[in-house]
Image 1 (cartoon, chains in turn yellow, purple):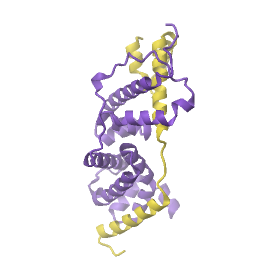
Image 2 (cartoon, each protein chain N blue to C red):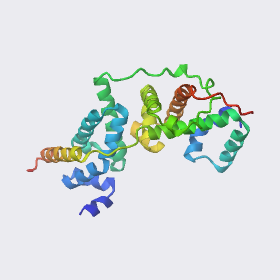
Image 3 (cartoon, rainbow over the protein chains, first blue to last red):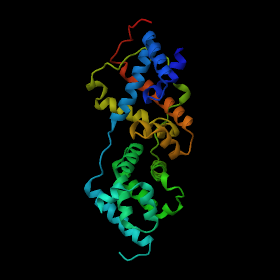
Length: 83
Length: 201
């Protein structure tokens, strides 16, 4: 395996969607190649940081209540029903 | 009643909404409000806009759910409506930041910098987070959407392909290139803390 192919497989490697054989090939290559080892580490941490930069949050109770009220009113109107 | 609703599939709920059941619509709002809000927020970086977009998205669901022919694809349809609404907002408000020219990305330049061992208080400092936010926002739209859907929202490649109406290989290609750009921008930023790797080939 060369560096270009190794780098192209990082995504599938992180998704755990490579075959056993390719996983071993990637592992062997990064063990032997310091550039790809650093490249895989920085690629992996980039993905991790993207997940951590703004973790998902919950809509406030007040906003959700307001939304539900609007949805109820509009749903009834759109179906021509009496609220 | 509530327990029964929680166990229903999206397809069941969509069918009941189409038949005019308000309780099914309530369950959809309960199930998806946080996801719609978070996606809108991560694309616009504006909490107030994200609330407005969330409201518009669910009103669109009421108005357009009859046009949804394949009920199983409800969630990806909802993400598509949300994504379109978020970009519509950004265009209206002229809030698109300068996009990173893809051809200028030099993947070799910073590869020797291993910044991954920096302490968490550096990697996750407010300044680092802001650099990463700006970097994500500066990606070309097609790439940025895929990065946000995958790495921030945690969707699967197949769901992203369905949401955006593109192939799975196209999702993978955009995601990989987007991550490489983010990695380069982070490497540039973190290089002030690190020396080139001393590891030998």
